[in-house]
Length: 279
Length: 279
Image 1 (cartoon, each protein chain N blue to C red):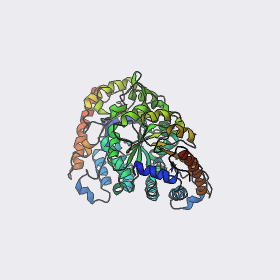
Image 2: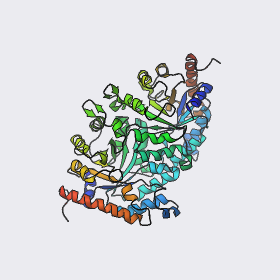
Image 3: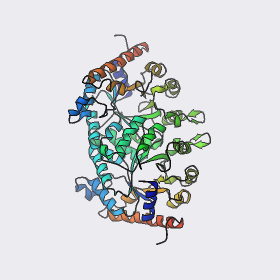
Image 4: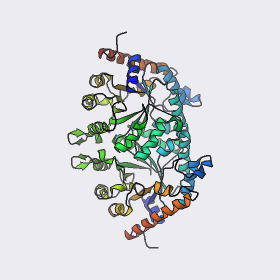
């Protein structure tokens, strides 16, 4: 999917919501355990209930790998179930030496090899250029590079000062010599509200994938105040806040309610920013 | 496996060789393609041919994931085939927020969940403490944290100066507040020979996993000169140099020859360091 196509989806759906499919056997409703593949059934019902309200789905690979072969199959089937016009993110946080990152790119982008072809994959920057560039050889596919993450440990290294920059700022600067904003996005945690101003100074035009709204405590309006750009430029992820809104038989309905609340807030933000019209 | 047990294996086998199982369909001998699972057959024959010469096996997950479900099954079956007294490394370079890293730890350490229980997993440090600590809750399991990698891109961030330290030195220092040398090792690339002196100043007692000998150009004697400690403290990985020594029907035999060359060199190094006796 191109940047322009993603922006058009945002305008059409009046939403920049990404639903995180961090689906775990011990957290999904008990009545689903009777299915041959409970997590796949859960994901399908969540997708059916939210697909008109969001522009992206983001399964985190950890939640699939932990179930071995069966989990990997669930990831593949989940990818197949995501509608083609919705931006798909393999939240895998991969990265290795060049010839190995090339194999990870095959994993997430080449369906002929792995049966999956996500629109994007999250990548960790620690190993530098040749760990990232192999992902950039696929047309209309995206690298979403970790910059400033939403977890407590982000301060250990990401905020350390390298000359006049913090490490995450150095990552933002250096990585822009590898790819344009048509191929690269950045992960910036919602729990870092005011830092969005710093990020936008360095990456005014990039899309940012923003985890941490909801369960982790990030504030949507704060993020948008500093983070919105002329093509929206934000994908706001909510995982637990939506998919685990209820653990009863009404889980899909409740997930939709939570997604709808966020979509309505986002619609107002997009209108206020004159990125869409009033209806 | 404990640190002491690993050292005993090194003394017994007179080797600190790790064989990297980066096995790819387009590089294994053609005659294996007739097998139902060519890569598994390849790995089994490589293991059979080298298991008395090495103390560790390291499959890199990228080379398995890229084949989807079948690849994940191959990884599981490969793990099962690695003898229990040989240290197994899932070279996965994972790392995510706390609750997600906990799922990755299940993936690689909890066979009841994933059918695999490696002795160790490689982890990327960028996300800080809570991305690493969930891996440390498993008894006798190891985190092998990326410090100074063997690829060209290492200079982009790892060598950047934070106050008086380079980033990789900051990683070495900070991570020692999370775990001892009984639970944590570091990845230090062999292509960084002289840097082993700097690493040993900060981590004198830790085991170091050293990729980059062979195909990537690292020098064994240079690494040992600066890196050896009183319990050896080094696991030297060779992947392509061993497993692809021949692409003919004699591939296992040639792999053994390459492994034997390295083992013989390592034996001399261990004798010279008085870590083992002459035979």
